[in-house]
Image (cartoon, rainbow, N blue to C red; front, side, top):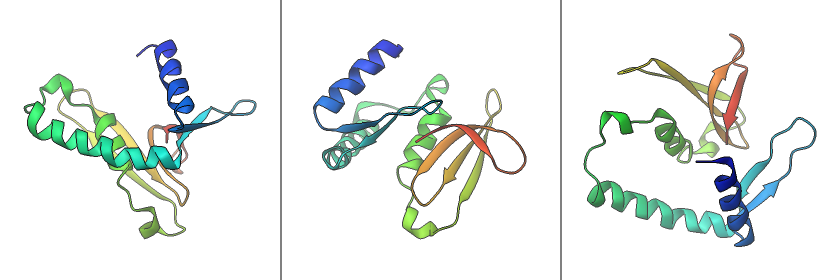
Length: 129
């Protein structure tokens, strides 16, 4: 998806009251969060996704298997309250093609999917929330 198309879609979701934009200051990335209306809409979207997975599509072809999509789905289902105040990092190694490594970074405030690790000390970067 082009950057222009994505920006337009995000802007329309903001205008509809589904997302709120949190602008980043110097060197920080802009972040979008669901509003309460967006959170209410999420269960409907999940239901459509479940229906589509069951009825509209067959098993995925090898070129349709995407670890980021799987981890993003998993990220939305983490029960943060069960984690408590701890920070938890879970590493996933994917094979069956080019070897890929990703992490779920679970903190009290949110869960992120990360694709790079800076050092052995679980400092993660290139994370999406």
